[in-house]
Image 1 (spheres, rainbow, N blue to C red):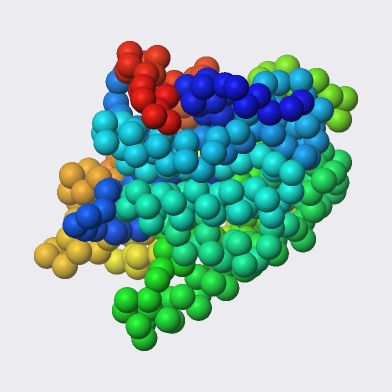
Image 2: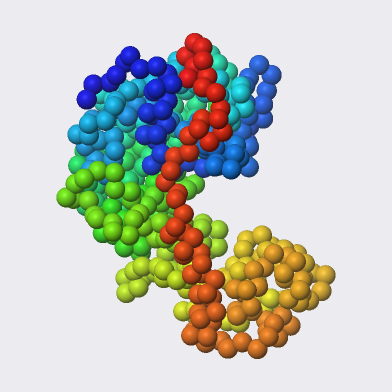
Length: 440
């Protein structure tokens, strides 16, 4: 379908913000940059949010596609070329105007810009580069920008864009080459991984350059991320976690995002989902991903070929602990930091607080509660000065029966929570539509 060029910027915004809702690979900025005289905006590690919540809280990242026109026919994508949907595209000037006008009204703190493939990867990447160049150099926008690198685009264009963006991402889409071949025949693993490797190499080289020359331009300072669709192809959780682990190790990614498959197209190659999108599975993958990134777990510890999927009734950490009861109980007052991290109910912050607090004397259960330990989970796996909080059996059936009660409520909440509605930038807040030159 041809692009509708006669649309207003407001109409384009409605189409292209809605078209971006299935791309979840954007959250916090992960970088600090102070505001400066003559420039607009700044960015902090505290994080960037992405829309308006239903209760009115400001979530401030303008998340749009440059265009929903695409030369590819990915079977799971609403924007695939064979779909009969309204097509449109912004101009670089329109994206700049929208970003600046939204920022000046305190609606946003930054921009997330993705895109379909218009004409060719090089053509699309050049448009994205021209947009960022104009936004940084002509509009002096100093806020956070997360942009997609287009697989197959000229490495020179990706490099130039990387010196203007805070974060870049390239979606892996599906965890295996076979999955891509089946559902995204225009894409390949090598096309996706090549620019991912280029960005990683560029970040590493830039890090050394900045050590020598403090005022050197920064290249993708907030790192890169990717996204995998969950449930569109038959890979199990173990395969997905092994892929994520390899991406973290080989490409130094900041985040792997997981997106539960939402059937937006009718196609015989796509799975039927009588129970709806696999939200609980997505949730478990995020929990396990967190354990790998911050708790020192490896994918092979959490799952295996003989046990390839996560327990639907227990979070991955509790499930792991129940399968390794020979390691418990752990004595809070003598355990090292990494052993503390293995205890259900003990997080990174509480483990550090335990290490610091016990320098002043032995800790009891009351102190652990004040520190932030979730005792309703931890109590089955710990002792304080050789004693449990109350008599407990270190037996799998006994502990799991107590843990599953709380976890079942979480499972219900996840399964009944509508997470795929793209909150409007206007409707939920009754914000008047912008008017004027290039506004929406």
